Image (cartoon, rainbow, N blue to C red; front, side):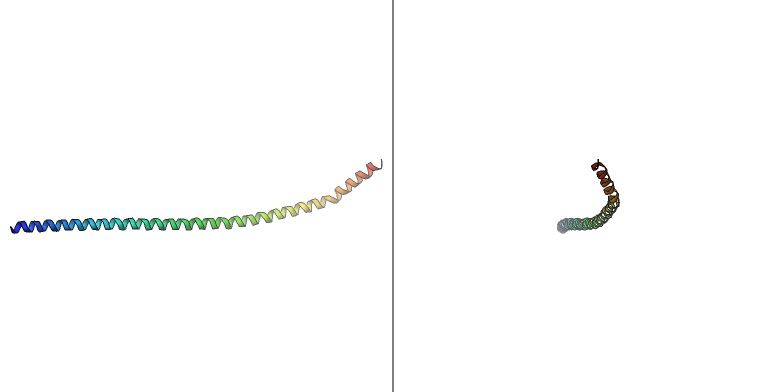
Length: 105
């Protein structure tokens, strides 16, 4: 009789240990899911920060390049004006000479 009672107690303890192990496993699994969720959220946040930093750097670089191109274009326009202004008086003189020589005839 005593042996049966001990066996039943041992079985009850075994069931209790199994239930506790199941609860612990479920708890561990839930913690793992939460950690993965947190890691994913952190990774997404880092990705957004990196993207924003890359966009800001690209905008800064693009702005600098635009300013450089504007300055270069301004310089080229100025050189073209100077070149045209230097050739203008001789061209006007030639046209005037041509008109004088052909209008006198």
